[in-house]
Amino acid sequence: MTEQITAVEVVSDALFACSYLWAHGRPYSRSDLEKALHQHKDTSTRYGKLVARLRTLYAMPYEDMCTAGFLNTDKDKAIKSRRAVLMEEIGEEELYEWLRDLERVRRVFPESAPQQQRTKLPLSRGSEGFNARQDYVVKHFLPAQSLCSIYGPSGSYKSFLAVSWACHIAAGRRWADKKVTPGAVLYVVGEGGVGVPRRIKAWEQVHKQQVDNLWLVNRPVFPVREKEVNEVLLAARQIEEETGAPVRLVVIDTLARCFGGNDENDARDMGAFIEGCDVIKQKTGATVLVVHHSGKDEAKGARGSSSFRAALDAEFNVKREGEGKALILSCTKMKDAEEPERHAYDLRMVELYADEDGEMICSLVVRDVPREAKEIDPDLAGVSKLSGNHMALWQAIRSRTAKGEPCTLAVIRDDLKATGIDTKHFARWVKKLTDNGLIIQSGEVLKVQSLREVGQ
View 1: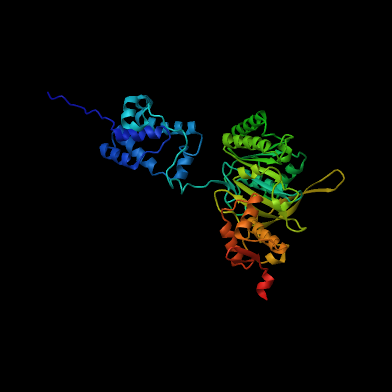
View 2: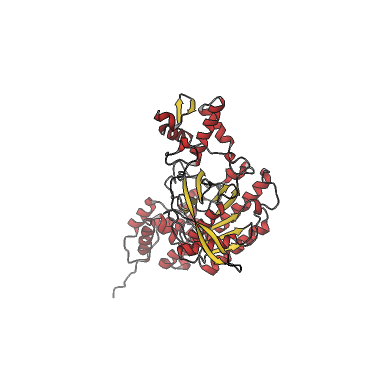
């Protein structure tokens, strides 16, 4: 009688390496995957099925990896999701035997031996990650998990814009035909009153849609205080539990009312405010949008310490277009992307209800259809695609030219830097104004030339 001998499948080092790295949230190499595929060709075996599964995971697009919970989420959750995949193929007991096999770990990953100290800093080599996708809450306007600000003088409609963005995100509707990432919104109504609820109701009437995922905090919140930050985090968790939607945006309206009585011009006080906002951003995964006032001299940007602007990922200036019901939105900083074009947006009057005296109570809604801004200065009329930084550059050159002061590339760049403007695209701005006939460049010297002079 012949005894039947059953071959015992042995996991290869290549498959062990791929599985171990996957289980710890780290990428495995194509070469190890190809070795594992060669060594476990039989897909009817457990290890053959596992390596086939790892090949499928390796080919998954970035967005699908995020959707499945393997990337761009809480690290502990991602690792749990990754290990669940391995357990489906080899079981929990065998998986954790592999992870505890220190002798094999040292042999397969000699560079990771415990006796070798390695930095915990997030290192990358050269241009690695150059094609990483930039995620947005409102595409091209509000980057995901960022600190942003809109600022302008009183009456500039900046809070109406903040409400518009909040409603579109909470409702999952495109804004200015740009994609939004839908989710819950937490809006801190620092200045109190019924203005914000009325603006939301007006938005609902215009768009014929409830915004149940938009939640208001009806008092100031002070990010400089740890207890207050913890309350915001608790509120975000509560909202996520009740709605099933992650908080995508936290609006702080306004910085002045949520600064806790500290000095906006003091870099240390502003640093504490920024730190609190960063904790909210990091712990919730949301974008924090701060509504802020401009200084006495609007040309010098938002008021307070320049450290606030330095910490921002995106900043926008909002001002009224003349005396009408319209705002002009200009991007004055976009850290990791191109600045969106400067445009005007009209506001629509909406009747809400009649009060006890029969008077109609109304509010305004931003009409998210961009159009060319109607410039007050005739020299800029008809020039398309001007950003806030183009305007600041032109005004700086005009000012120095009018006073007969030195006006060179280096001087104007320094003038812009002094107002807090990031000048990494300075040469591109100069070319734009030169190509449109707004300025003349002669070597290092710049001067203003109006469009009226061009036509003569």
